[in-house]
Length: 135
Image 1 (cartoon, helix red, strand yellow):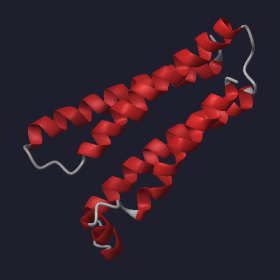
Image 2 (cartoon, rainbow, N blue to C red; image 1 turned 45 degrees about the vertical axis):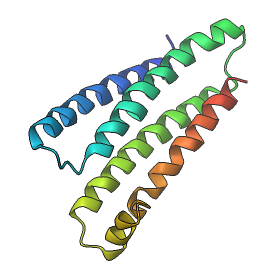
Image 3 (cartoon, one colour; image 1 turned 90 degrees about the vertical axis):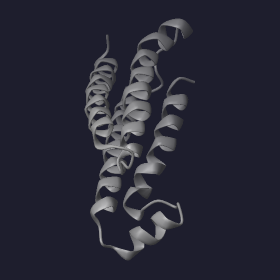
Image 4 (tube, rainbow, N blue to C red; image 1 turned 180 degrees about the vertical axis):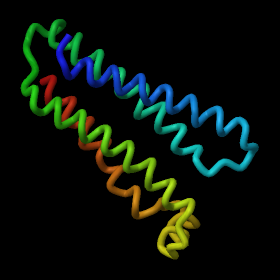
């Protein structure tokens, strides 16, 4: 397996364990849980997406009979994916403890916090990188 495949699969396993820990904490905390979005994103963007990317980087070049467009692009995608997910998660944690009026105003309007806005843009960028790398 290539190093990028191993990186994605290992990071998927780390996010899976983190999602389990957050899920157990959520179950023990009762009905009002401010970190539910973190749990959901650790599962979806961390565990599932990272595993799909890892398996895809291993299988798709073999099925198509062509190498990746760029190994470097795959590495950039890996780092953007991880930085984006951690940044988005930290944004929700900061928002829950913040006394910043901007954060609370956005939270009331369901627009999210400015601290996690960059983390929300990165998934779209990295998914585009993944698609481009397999064409």
